[in-house]
Length: 77
Image (cartoon, rainbow, N blue to C red; front, top):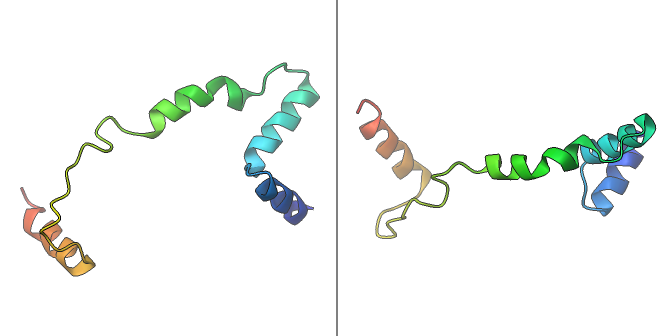
């Protein structure tokens, strides 16, 4: 049953959790599922304030070895 639910939720572009919340809310007689009530707050909280504010220096290498070396150099600062 879970696989069928997972497949159908994927077709609709929804998570199993969101579908479960809606169904439980309907079963309990709630007019609006908990997820919808708090979703705006979660969207705002999902991204930290600094997100997107970092400028990338494209002249520097960004391969994993270079990233690891940079982390090692600045780890103790």
